[in-house]
Image 1 (cartoon, rainbow, N blue to C red):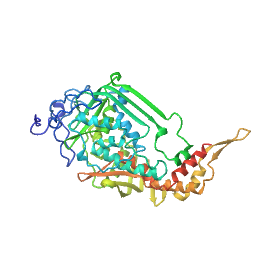
Image 2: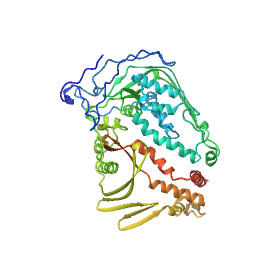
Image 3: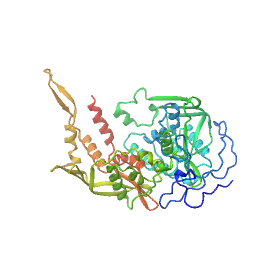
Image 4: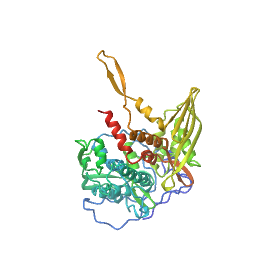
Length: 491
């Protein structure tokens, strides 16, 4: 069955009740047919009771949802209902993000070999890998742009944690010790289209059991010794959910890329967080980007300072943050206004990252607020600040005085008078560890990437890059030395 082409000429306006889809971002091509030709019928998987019928081919559009009339008038998002349904509806997101804290991923696979022929098959792939405790397999199932946003930081993160003696060298999240996911008798409803390239698939039946035991995580003996010799008692959890008992059916989003279907972590989180509603045409904010990586980062900061959330969304990566562009109106409607801070000068430097991305880091900054000027300059392992006619400079070598002057408690005499208690003198190894930590903090920045000739900000990859940038400056046992210092303060 062929797909009905859109009407000739420009699309109907949102208030006409006719077909409407947001224009593609500059230089981007519209998505292909929403549903590919039917594939041969396959037998249900070992835990699937039945395969849900596929809906007929539909013209790509934003479908009206409860709370939206024929005119698609934007309405406030429905409040998210509480209950176990929403928890399991986002369980893939929770598991992947939890694994992100300790995970790795080897980005060697060709995305063209991944994906599924149907939305339901894409969701099935996630549950198959979860049942194998293969969190890396789950990551590889995701939409290519989301997988890449998580892959590079996680790949570096596990290497750093092994180098810093947090993980044992045998750590392998293709099979995570202590984690168990079991799904039995899962059934799915027909896919429901919410944009021209995204559908959601509801779980309609079956049970899910999730448990973990932190004592079985592949942490090193050195790390256990530093924190006290063993994993704290009670570091286990388990949950059993019968989908039929859930107050609302959990729904997982899938996205079509290059004619294949992929589970979307970001759309699943966004769709459920906004009350399981489709984005309206009024929500859509197209990507605009900037001419350079430094311009993208600087323009993002300026937009946020002005409270210009729409301008900020236009600078987000249309690949990594497609969900924010589609639901952008729900974000911009919550703008809190101008902060009153004006950035009159910004100088940055860039560092090349994997996949053509660039980290934009601060070199100097001049801001004004209420007639007062504040300036900051980063030079090597030092940072200088000037405000109100007063200037000061702080370098990594000064960290010992800062830490030792920090109050950690109070010492009280018999007469009731109390004095602040400061940290004790650090060892030479601990001082070096703090210095390395400070150098890492000075190198953090905003990660940007290029799409169709324009540069955009990647917030998810920026978040993952923060910790890696800091730990990259730590040496062999620096992290253990820092843990030892803070552990001593607690006694």
